[in-house]
Every structure is written in structure tokens, then in C-alpha cells.
Length: 206
Image (tube, rainbow, N blue to C red; front, side, top):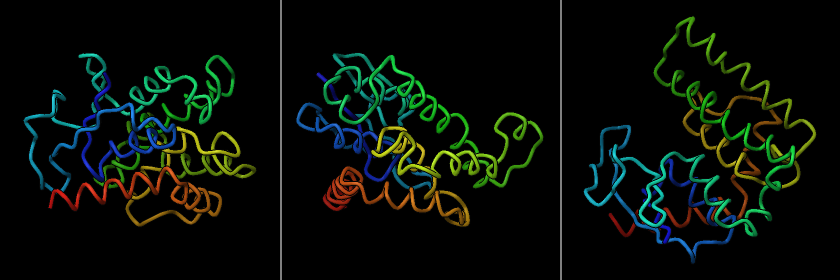
């Protein structure tokens, strides 16, 4: 059994979008929980087994799996036929490139956004993560001749990388290739379905 613990309009929305993209919503027990939000609202939910009270958390036959990219990779491994429709085949160079973008999103892009929000400046941060200008240049170069990071179609790499930009202080940077890509990501049916799902669940909980 696969159970996903999810809070509407949170980091776990990315997992909901992947589930929609893969067409496996009927095979996931999705449980809505509360979380403590960045503005201090919300509470830690007693029914959420995540050790830090966070989301997403996937429980597979009693085993807990944390972290968004790990959950995405696990779901694609559990449902290989569905994954083959939305991501490169494992073992191919393209699959390795997709995994690299997914890892970069969590290990570089998200920390850079958090540093911007917190207005933190330190040489160690620049030597570790470089800076936002370099991150944007990397994205822009990758998107100059393609609709999405891996080519013509949205993959989990796009879901992860695009999800940080709504939190970027000052709004989306003026890089046409990036802004066009973000618009395409938002217009994807899986993105719209995840947003509609969250809106419905948030309204019913209000």
C-alpha cells in the first residue's frame, strides 16, 4: 500500500502533480494533514508520521520515505510503465541528466532562493552554491532550444526546478527563456489538476 501525506499548497504539491502526470491517483491513498507554515500559521498534525511534521511523506507498506526527489524517484520505480510516459528510461544518458536536474533543484536552486528570502550573504554560501545569476544562466542555456529541461515534454525535473520560483523575492527574473518555460510548466494539465485539487481540499478544510 502507498500512502502520501500531503498539505495543500505546500512542497508536497509537487508529488501530487507527479501523481497526476503519471496517472496513478487511483493507486495512492492520499491523506490531507496540517503543517506549520513559514508564516507561523498551522499546527503540527498528530496523524502525520513524518518525524519533523513535514510533507511530503510517502509510506510504502509501512516504510516511510521522505524528501521530494526521493519520493519522485521511488514512485517512478514502483510504476515503471507510467514513468516511461513522462520520463527518460532508467539507464539512459537522458535519465541521468534528468536526475541531475532534480538533484540540482534541491541542492542548489532551493538553497539559493532561501538565501535570497533570508537576505543572507557569506563567502561560504557563494563557494558552495555559487549565486542566483549563475543558476539562472544555467537554466537559460538549457532552455534556449527546448520547451522543457529534457526536451519537448514536462518531466519531474521541470516540476522540481519550476517550483522554487514563486518564492523568489522580487518575482520571476526577466529571462525570456525562463519566464516562457515557467508559463508552460504552469499551463500543463498536471499542474492545473494539482492546483485544483489543492484548492478543493483547502476550501473544504476552511
